[in-house]
Image (tube, rainbow, N blue to C red; front, side, top):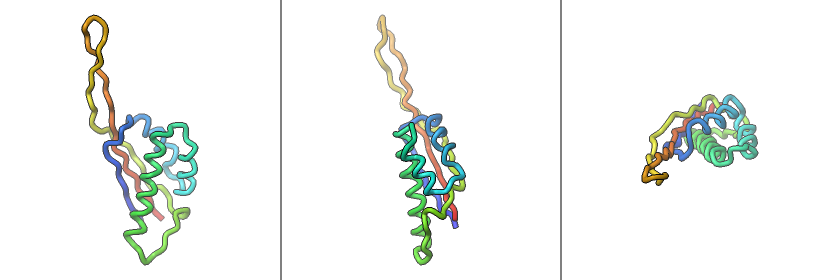
Length: 113
């Protein structure tokens, strides 16, 4: 059995999120959550751990008669796609404007037993 969860419009760059996703790809769910708790990239790792917990909850809701232990589940696939970009401007010298790009990403995870 497997279940999916997706977070869209995550306010982080896809490059930072891919670094965290590569750390947990293919690992058991319990190991991945403990690894994310001590990750250097705190902002992204917190969101990805919430996403993994959501996927585990989705699996438990799909089949409520079957008990599923989170430690027996494995992260089958996790991928990060780029999302839209918010374009902002900041004042620069001599009346110019500098562009600021606030990037977003979409993260999807699949857990399976």
